[in-house]
Image (cartoon, rainbow, N blue to C red; front, side, top):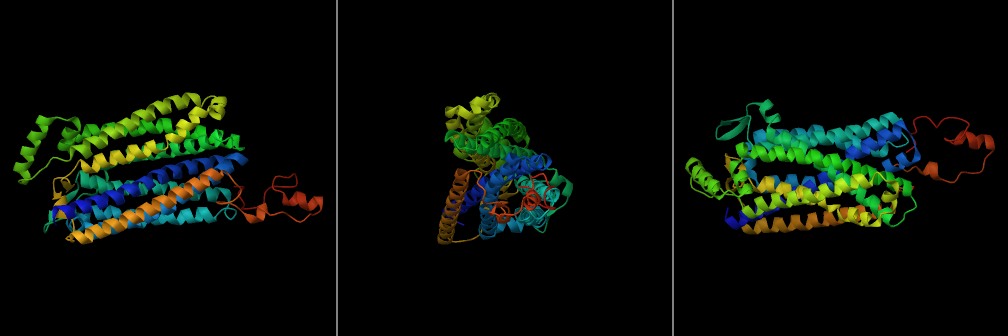
Length: 444
């Protein structure tokens, strides 16, 4: 393939994988937060807790539904543009992708459906179990994806057979440090993204003096108090990953550090080992991505430190309008940090798709320049449309606040009843003195 077509294929992968990753970040974090909120609502069934599950759960479902489409499109472009990768290493990294799809994704989607349509049908403990299955399988799904990506960055557990790679040691593949460290990093980043999102939406309503003050005061505090530890978990795993680059990907480490002499030595060494070629990744994307990530982390660190102090004071949470504006403006920061970190991780291993084994130019499919350009335009338009739709739906529902419609709403419970005798009204009222709620009807 000519260099221009190769660049188009790489740009297409960056678009699809990067866009999908942004959806996953919020979905994974919100799944865990909603599961924790519903646990509290189940144990202590207060009206505010139940409304929080429904409101934040609705935003989670919206982001999940649109993110599913981006994931399907990303899988399609793998087969379209990177047939060389699947033919050479698909027997190894494709295994974890298949497990992720069959075990994690299908289970997650099935139980999410049960959770969505199980309101007022399941016992409250059964309904709680469904969202925890969703949250845990989302984590399992992320792990399997990172097993595949970890293999591309640090190929272990394989052997060569007939010019292809086959799985030789499943344990080494599953415990690959490149995958495990990335999993902790992503999990912390997802919670950080969800925390900033929850705090930003809550700040919007407090800034506008929305009547549901107690609801959004509690939500803002949850978002802030989740973000603070999540930031340090993310930074901790990220720091360990940076330290490990010296052994796993020394060229990326040298480019990040700006060590010109070391870069020249590594280039000469790799040219002798792998043949003539340019083995230095783009400094603009590699070092630039890392610096943007670190800058975003620094800004979030100061915001989290100040926010943790301010959130301890009810009056500050409710009335500090300047802080509300800052929280709203800070919602994109975790996204910026995560996408720039992803650019650093992926661009920094170039020119390799499978580090040290398969070059990017050998992995791409043999399509013409026109075909690659047409597919890139198609994917760009599709992903732009999905991003606009997702943003519009999230903003629309977020601005509505905790209304008595949407997820978990039961028309039978909100309909105006026909006047009845006092004894019948008392029997029908779950909160009345005549008796407990109807069986198998959690009050969400």
